[in-house]
Length: 401
Image (cartoon, rainbow, N blue to C red; front, side, top):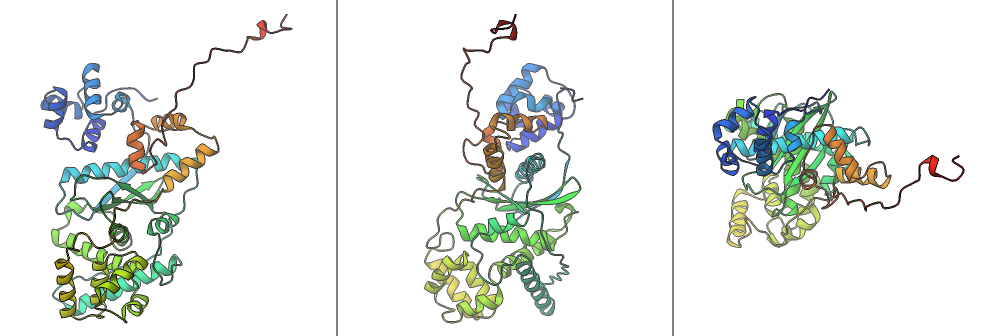
């Protein structure tokens, strides 16, 4: 039985999801910081204060009175900007992905999502920057794993036209957030749902071009394949974290730009910036990523690489290359799942929101649409027209005597 009572952990989660400190929430509610802290830790506010908190956080009041019935377990979240993003910002976005995982668990009861399809790989990754032999061995190891990944997914050595679709077809859930915090790039999370692993990748969209978003997704795939998911990143050193970021970057480069085919592609004009601009459309990668890869593969010398990057800077292309426009993800598996349920008339927006509420995912439709990267108004509930005609009772119908 679900006893309706105020739950302090839900207040804390809602506050963090909105990116507010206790002091900031106190200013929005005229409730003292001390009282709010007590509520988060078990004290029970009166109903007027619950309503004030709900209005300030833009959450339905019922959210704070419900039990979370989704049994998902999140162990760690990889953030590309761990060293610069604040702990609060990281926690807020980790909670967003936890909400996404809960919705996934609910919908999984009604639709068949793609099964996670990853090869088994072992990565040693000796990343001693002062040991050239170790560096070369690590790079060869990453190149090999990238090829194994491509072979396992049947990608060959050609450019990947739609990395989001490729990830989703192989059981990795992708969503996108419009994030104000520019220190958050992309992040990934492993969640245990009914004893099985589900990996989620979230990318920041709204300003970033296609090439950078594809690289972000490939970077997070690198974390999924190469790194442990059972330890808190807060417990590892900054040097270890930087090493993992470097390894994920190397994987993304090797995965998106395979050594054999990319070398053949650039051998005609390896130092011509205009040629890289042409290749950008074909390989769906930034010019800078391709120049870096060319240098990594020894297609250009150190001096050539440095000269080309100076030219990129001189032209103002460091942050905005020719052809860059904001890229938004395609409709994802959540939109597909909900469309299937609606088209089959198995559920509608109203009954789906009620289903989410049953499991404790009680949020306004606009918030859920944003979390799941859904089309605007996908969950909009149309008001039912008033019924002025009703059926007669059996004893009122002809022949009822």
